[in-house]
Length: 245
Image (cartoon, rainbow, N blue to C red; front, side, top):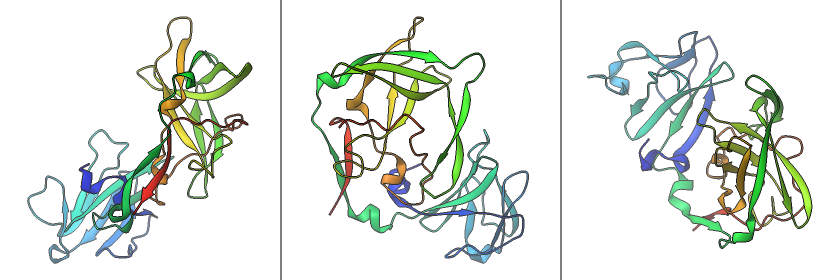
């Protein structure tokens, strides 16, 4: 997705039902079925599926981001992106003229501190693909979060653990909060770790803690930290807050 249609440009995530309905600010009727997001519109409405030679005139299918052949559409400067989350379908609207994009002035971050890069050991939960834990999301709904194991580490002489997920490439990721969350930093942050070696050794570098998409736009779906990932000390490392003009 181009920079002008990046995270700051998101102005809506519209969940769809099987019955055609209107989406505020968009022409046509929109609904979801087993194949993806459907739209019914006239050519004069100006909705164009990416790669199509002409605007939609009748019905069109938009395959969601979970499909290898995912589709997007446009309406003037708007980018329309179908998504699928836990079997539910929605249409996201990205507008380059979004107020939050115009007000963006950068990201505040702590200075890099080597002491915040600590050795860690990954221990998987067991055979298979791990498990799922249900956590609240930024949009107020609860959804399962796939987790694969724990990383253990020591900070200021205290032994700690974090629940993490493991990607296909072996890298680990987690959702964390700490004593700075909601004050000096955003209410939670994401973090990634290098793929552990054969003995589970990796590095937990809190300098790499970064803001979730919902820090940039309210319409993103971001999982809150799972149980045990709310640290009782201040992690003064990594990204802090979105700056605005």
